[in-house]
Length: 282
Image (cartoon, rainbow, N blue to C red; front, top):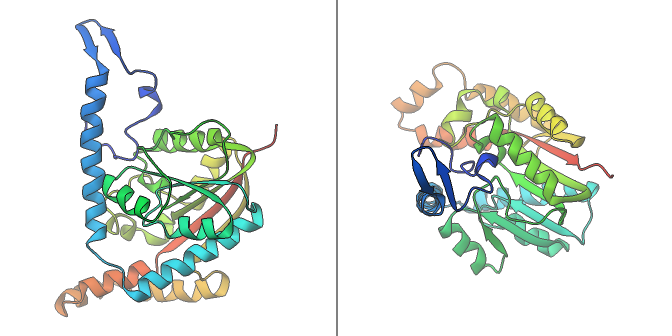
């Protein structure tokens, strides 16, 4: 078992339908047992990943900023797909989007791998399915919306990314909307790797456009943003992002022991791409 592979993508398509005993040249291998061992390891990995973020509690400013971002994204989603309907979120975080979606009239279901996070989400009354993605543990054509914020970049590579979009297409009803938010590697460069050790699949506007097109989606809108800022506001913040990435800034932060402050500033200036794509009607 190769533990270097990203925990979000270990259930790739080649593993589907292989539960049970399979015959190989060297004898019989019981994949049910191997699958159970793999699931225990993956749950441990997912839980330790969640702990590393849970221990850094959001400030009131951070929580407020997150809520504003979620509301803005729901408003964007509503322009393309209005409730009521079923919304499936992959990687729900602490559930702020889920709570807002329910308040807006959606029937909400989340998919999450971490037992620790599932406990938090269910305590809030949210419906959560435990799974590592891909594949998705849902029926075909059951949702009006599949929502994934900061998930695609965690895929282990192009095959896992393609499997992810294929599963999203399968889960959506004809005419349903895929709503994806990813970082822009071309803007973030080295910070793309530094901000989160589980980033694997490089996301840029062109790459994700190609991925969605090849996956059978019709792209309807792409929005660049920093926080809730778009357009000129985003451009001004992008200028500030350039300043905190000038040569010598890292050395200065080490000298003044302000590395964590610099990290937080860069994270708040993190530029994202939001893709709204639709599953075509028959």
